[in-house]
Length: 157
Image (tube, rainbow, N blue to C red):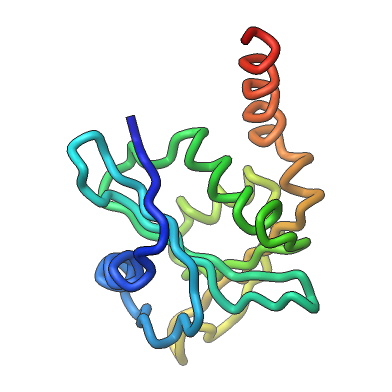
């Protein structure tokens, strides 16, 4: 079973920076993180939220992992509840290198809008700005499945 850790922003930021080429803790500024811990107590993934703008109700996020098991329905639910429920954001933003087709495909299946940006990571490296509104998240097939499962467990209890 996976567990989540909070209030370890510096350690989780360092973990993400170590696994993400070109990322730097200083570039995140003020941030909040969620760590994903495996059953042996190891940090296997981290999510970072930064550039929170309460006036625009927007926030950016990123993440990294060393184990594919981190991406459970519970983790995905937590990943999106933080910005949309706890922070009250209406839009979530992330940046992805254009060559990362696997991640871009996953984000597209979650209803993210993908906007190609030439040279976003430098003269020879393009990127994609990915945005997801709260309405798009709630309308996604995965969100409907997650919350249907939650409602089903609550009704059975």
